[in-house]
Image 1 (tube, rainbow, N blue to C red):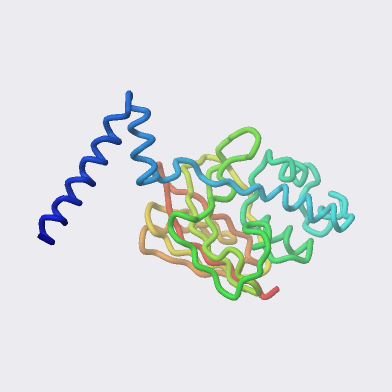
Image 2: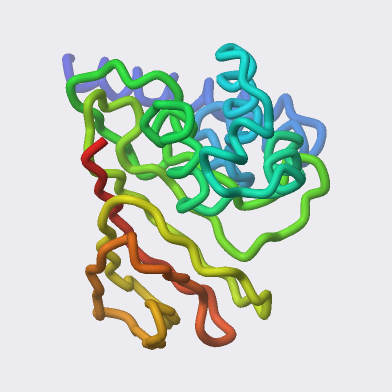
Length: 232
């Protein structure tokens, strides 16, 4: 008797499912139903506007762009482009801005740092500065913070995507150290007067005070794990 009841319940459940399916009149409705029971993965990156946060903090502290320029050595026009979302700032620039505003760079990447630890699930990572917020122009890189909201942290781990780019960017220098491990593809590192090409499985550790530039080498996307360390 118990077995018959269980089989009856299964048949009823199957009939309810088929009844629900039969109500759809087109592919769109059927897809909506399938999405409701198994939501699709996001197809677009979640953007974070670093420039907006920089501008907000600067204005809260009653500082001008000229003040920030004097503290960082960055051109006023360049700073204005960052704040307006027309330029996506490299990590080295974000570090300089954070120091100038007496904040950790993580604030501009993930907001308030108020947790004793942080866990980032693979589907929850947020891409930073892959596109400019206004023009949608591609800038050759995108980075995803792996430690948002962790308070009092000295390390900033990122997953970075380096797109093929022929842009001749300037080297940057700032306080701290950097460790990079190449996950896939090939990466070109300009360190002082030296140039190195690293491939999947290679790594490099250097003082960030040495003028440096990290960029894609080749025609395929390069993925790296980068860890920035600062004592401030």
